[in-house]
Length: 362
Image 1: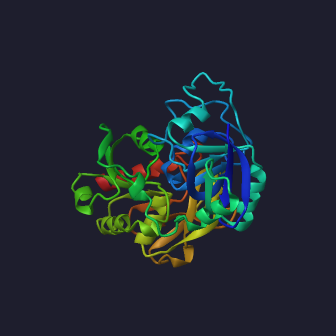
Image 2: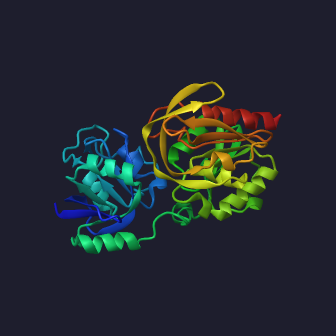
Image 3: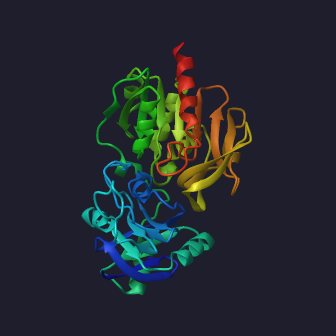
């Protein structure tokens, strides 16, 4: 165990001890309020470019297993906890959390007051940060944090998307093309379990190629960074909208759809990250507890009201959590109906997508 420092761009510093890899990484510092599911969080491509702090104090007690990956490797740029368990106690575990992070070159930091860190982010907002085991000079680290690129204006999708398309599931009544902006594996699993053939394509796949794939629907996946910077997927979505193809957007996919429909996005103060966000369906007044991970949001007032209806809102801050097109078979949500981790309240949305494709097939 070595000394390590987390330094924020506003000059705030936290000193603790490292676990996992050694070195130095920058990223946006954010917090996640989930009590479990750290493996799914670590491997979620939406966290690319971020240093994630867990609010739950003890992390790592059940280790890492081969089944619960949401991508092929950890995607975070750093991992901060109050205490990392050195004892792994679960029959499914294949490797400990520290060994897993070390294997993949991810720096972990423990022994800091994560409650104080979370309260600071909540008050000051998410900001650029650096985590280091090699440079322990606080002034130097703050300068590096300030000089790091941050998330605004960066297309991080191109850093996590596939290199080439692949078939996730080759059998099913409905053929869904998933545009991979950083898709979690459980999205494809849910589609497959709902009788879908699933083809996953890179984010830079052209509209013409997608259109010629004999598809029944398109899913715009989750992913990291600023949605406004992912201009190629926004244009592809605009072209798909003209074809009246059923579209389901999740998280970043929801934001991209909002931009393609003529809306705007903005950066939230500290984002929504955790497995306990209350969301109301305005059509039924039903409240779901949802899994979320996003730092940007669609501006409700920027959407064309003659075309788009807001269907869901976040009950904590009243931001947009879902929308649908009034005339086309298109809808999206800001949260994660596929869960992993988190509650399964919103899985019904996959069946709504199936209904849209079934109606088009008739």
